[in-house]
Amino acid sequence: VEFKELVRSFNYKRILKSDPQLKILVILGTINDKNAIISLEKTHFQFTEDELSLTLIKDLILDISQIEENDIYYWGVDLLKQDLTRFPSSKINLIYPATDVHIKKYDQQEFHMITETPQMYTEIVEPYINKMKGDRIKWVKNILFDNKEAEKIIYRDDDLEKGFVILPDMKWDAKTLDSLYLVCIVMRQDISSLRDLNESHIPWLQSLLQKLRSEIPKHYVGIKPDNLRIFIHYQPSYYHFHIHIVNVKHPGLGDGISVGKAILLEEIIENLKYLGKNGYKNRNITYAIGENHDLWEMGLKDAN
Ligand code: M7G
Image (tube, rainbow, N blue to C red; front, side, top):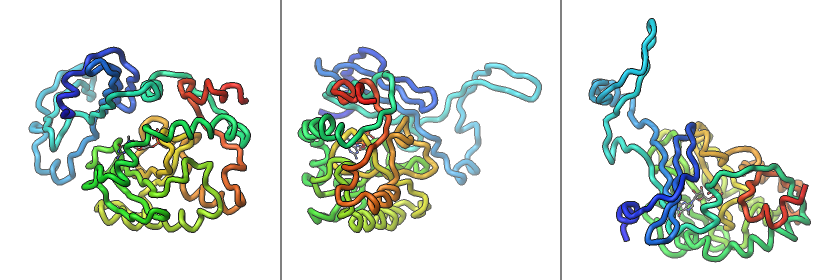
């Protein structure tokens, strides 16, 4: 079924999240009696300098309703010219059918900083990760082995051990360079998370990092190698090793690039030099976790 048709048959249940700063609204509902999540994110202004200098401002701002004025100050709301290709109103994401894990992730919740010890990892987290590796990462397998999103891939190395693909992240509108957001997914399937990295991976990670910095600027004019913030998440939502690549000027969506969630790839490589052959399995790792995360009830809440 077509995306548009699915969205049209969405029945509202409740608001999961409404963020005035990010201008994001996430709504829970149903489509054909199955749970669905729609998120709307207001788009960034895409006018270029050239366009602005050529266009009359009255052609962009179609109407204004004044709120107040005082001395030399005026404020109000306005109606901007909209157009699905050039000036869309918002970016829309749909998850359908949405699982409980999806719903809980977006829902309001309390967050806590916890320190995960190696023991907590083996007793609580590792069994959970193994359980989460099936259907939930189908989209990853689709990209790697089934030509999904193939035309969007900007770099591909099919080597099953060393290879990886780079493509636009689902969070990105695939256009606004200021919010450039790419994801790099590795071919190998033996790394579920940061915990599986050790010193044997250093040369591979170094060459991967170098490829990211050399390949991406070739595809996005104006982006320089040092404009890329390159990091991974712990805990990630998906347990197949992947890397986030974001324009350094983009403050990120929500907690996506916060400390306590995002770790620079450079930082990881540097750490691996000192962590020995068990790598990140040996360390305490401190991060933020929401009470809705399954790991919270599974034992992380009793941890600290
Ligand atoms: P994560 O750290 O596991 O989870 O990153 P997060 O969603 O909490 O950040 C997974 C990354 O993959 C995120 O940046 C997602 O937006 C992105 N992503 C997720 N899915 C399901 C897709 C997809 O189907 N296609 C693409 N291109 N990106 C996706």
